[in-house]
Image (cartoon, rainbow, N blue to C red; front, side, top):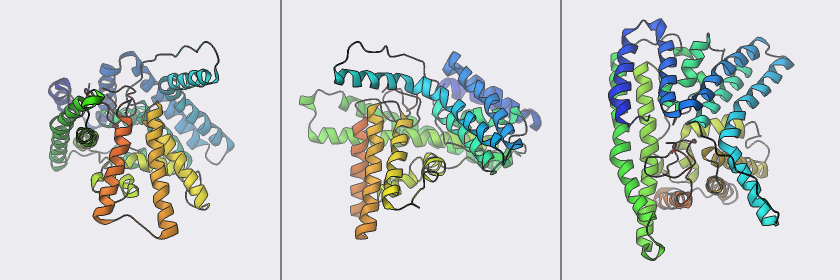
Length: 403
């Protein structure tokens, strides 16, 4: 079930919110928890157990870490909690890719029989709720937050259906003041409804139609694919990616507002960026901040000299590409952006040159579009629409964002 489906808009949405506004405020967290599990189960069927099991796991580890802060037990529990969160992601999303990569290496080396590649049903949104679980435990260990009061409260946050499948990546620190107390404000509900409708329009009016054009162009045989037509396909695909992903983010933020939350913004007009560095400050901002706070800065950030900074950037964008999807094209896409960011830093540090103005904008759009087109023929980085691949999430390995 996706936000743009009739079953969600005409059945789940009215029934859920009618119940939400009518029941006592103290029961609303339980309703969100149960409703979110139902929402997820409809689409994920039996693999929904993966999400359900992460709720008691993270709740227990969070409280244990908090009770033992400042001791080796807390550090050990954090390490075990991180590994426990990553294990399902590695198995369901990457085991097949790692096995195939091993087979490719054996083939190149001239070895014999390949290893059977496991085919597992990928739980939708697994990268999103994995990152939420990791940030929750790490922030408790960093003394940035206290654990959720009850397992129901944590389950409400961890499984919350508005942002479960396609983000934005909401950290507990960003909503902790509204976990127990969320007054229903008519103005906020009205704003949420409008925001949801804007996102829905982006998805079904613009993204789906751009996707239809891109699919037809990329399906053309090579002898019919002229340069002009190829650029039209790349442009329409770039628009599809943005309006699909931004549309889902708008719908999630709108639904969150209707529940009484203020989810972080995920996009800030990225296609008006005048450099690739600026692009990543505007594109999928919650993911960029997550990698900055939990990977880039712990690696040393830009504090250990230029070479270490460039290495850290490549590591972050290698992981960013791999997070979006388990395929070589995703990794290449991430490394392309890492290379572009490093190039801009070198130009700024060595020559004092910073892309800007119309030339900077044109160059940025050209490079970003080429990078999108590079991943289009194979599994694209992230969320899929029903027609074609689109990097809106991480749980869709096949072209057709996350579903």
